Image 1 (cartoon, rainbow, N blue to C red):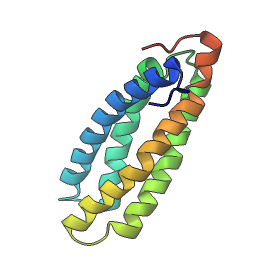
Image 2: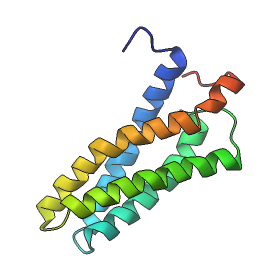
Image 3: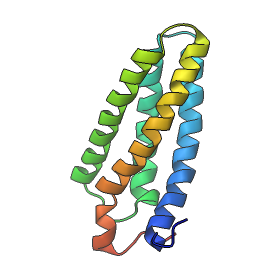
Image 4: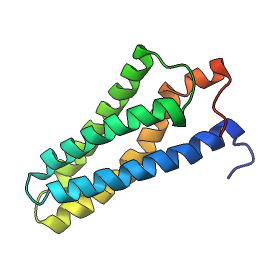
Length: 137
């Protein structure tokens, strides 16, 4: 890690990897299973919705600790909706076709949306950290 990365940033990144990694694995598996029976866009949307609930609960309490408010959580969910729009667009572009195309498209979507999710959490929930002084690992 960079020497310029603060302990707060490092702690957030480690916690994000734990929460985000488990969320990614679970929602990817949900997507793959659902895409056996449903259109890829519907499967992605259901998996993403499950991921939003999981991520909102854990990110606001453990990853980006600090002051929580309804407005901040609303902004966090709004960011995730924007990321969903990016992801669903990519699924629409690359996920049509057979099962293999859907699985590959989902992997591509993850490569793009995971960094966006961290950025959103950091920007929306991370602001409370500076004010509260919390955020240590």
